[in-house]
View 1: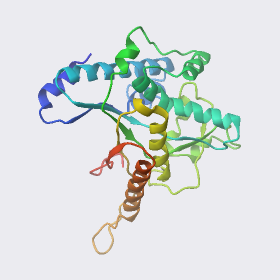
View 2: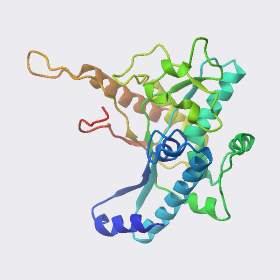
View 3: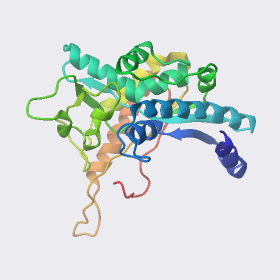
View 4: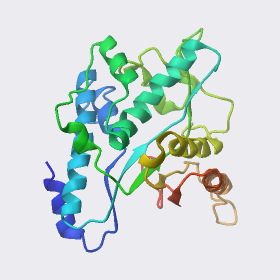
Length: 287
């Protein structure tokens, strides 16, 4: 249904220039229906793929409805990652990286931009007993032209197809990846931390990863990719008030500076990036 999109446009359309249909639909689909970390707390992989597909369909229908009402600049915002194999010469690690690239990136980008799901993804899911519930007309509706792609990116993910000796590799990775085994068709993938600086939440700090991601999107999707905005990037650090009564926020300042430079590097390498937004303008309960 497009009722909500139409309602919001009718109320705010004269004050909104850029519209994004969804923010991080990955979270709703996989954290809501596969890992159960988010509402509605389900652990039902087939339902996760149904949720994913129907969010895509809702996006396409909303784009059409909003354009019919006069909205001009429409897009979607995805949380995307670089899936880095721990050992690029190891076939199991390479396959692990492919599977995580599928879960975070290609299951979203390919249908939205190219109007199809990747063939290797369909094969992976069939082997695991899952399927994406596509019916005639869905993919054409999903792949409505958009005017921008919002990219949310905080860190890369190094992965392996081998569980390390002595326990779950995800314990050394960013804490919010500990539910990795709930990702359908990627249950055997281990998330392995790297020797990099970390935020207060344990997220790796690696600005060149943002450059890599933005350049890759441009090279891989070519003319199908609209201009991009980095719609979320930032870091959580423990604020300490010093004796002079101030917070000298050196780590966060360096994080933002270095990631803005990373965006500049991507632009120099041909990525069409039109803006960079820091998350978050204000303190939030999450951080």
